Image: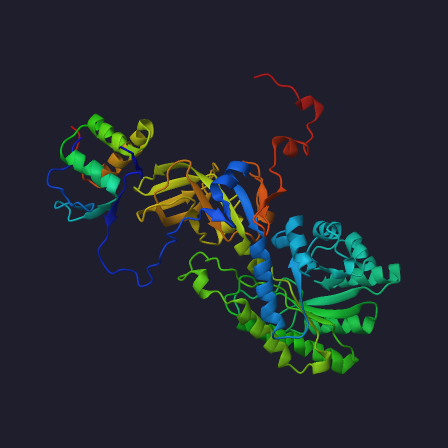
Length: 82
Length: 452
């Protein structure tokens, strides 16, 4: 599960997808997850980093994380899993 | 190191093109308290969902409306429309402020009596008045507003039977330039039916014609039709005086004033488009004052407005049950408030506001109620902040009709709480329980047992 390589992410949470020309905006938590995905961190590492930094129980984070990844897939920002 | 507050991750696709000419600011501030009481505490004490009514807002709104009319016309009386909200506590606030009772059924008539309203201050409207209740209303000198000729014949018979002249008004429907034109209640002005009814009453001498009544529509977004209506009723009053030398004691302009809610499909929000009490008052009173009614005979002006008086005083508090994603990628949020409690969501775009601070990020969201029914939709598509399970929401401007038209459907009805003027909460209607519901049912003996 990887973010597409040529996706551009700005510090303020702006995403540009050169393949489609679409642009997106994210909140700070979303931006942080996308940046970790861009660094090719796996899910466990992302979970650790986020639950250490934010006041959220791991189980609850997992729900929002899965939903967020699903949305990224829906917007064609993730590589297809083969 | 202290952990930072968490907001669920969110991504939104940006659309280029022309921005909307009327891009609206959403409600960016949470509603964390109502009349000084914390929303979280209210839900903690009374459960979720729960209806909250603000006594302060009820009295303030009524006094604003009163001021608009009494500064323009010498004799004004408000009559509380029971069907809009007939909780005893609510009705009694209006009665304490001097409002009479306006009822449209035997049940409402009895409710007004049980609240201690003297029969002569009850206006009995509506198409369904049984002989039993008409007799009761005649004995108690109530003001009976005749809806159709069959009712008039029944009143004539009761007048003979009781040897008493009932105090009546006729309800008049008319063309005031609005669409749809209401013609199902009362007698029509333009085709002469209203004048015919008046003549029959005056010549029959069995009924005491004390008033004229109209109710031209509901949620009227223009005030001028009221001016036309007041003028037409005034013409009838003048004709009665000329022909019978009889003065009408009151003109009842009914209700229909819009609240500041936004109707579905409206381009601009209700807060920007709805006339205020001064607009309605100016239209109605100028229609009467500029008529041919002699100044010494100006009738009492009665107003039965309900919705505009109480909508702002009502709040519905609820909780997020779940978030999920629809097939087209849109977010959907499921609340514990459904159309069963929020009947008015069929015609209003209700403003749903989080009860806790939230960021400026919003997502296109469909907001659903908890019912296992496809029609249970509060908002089809709204830019909504990112709420989590168990977060609370407040829906404002729901004081009118929801606590009377609510449905006992799938779930039981919740508590209703009044916050008094000192900021103290009072339970004014208990929540329904299975026992309450089952106490009305009877199961035949042979259906009591089964084996699965």
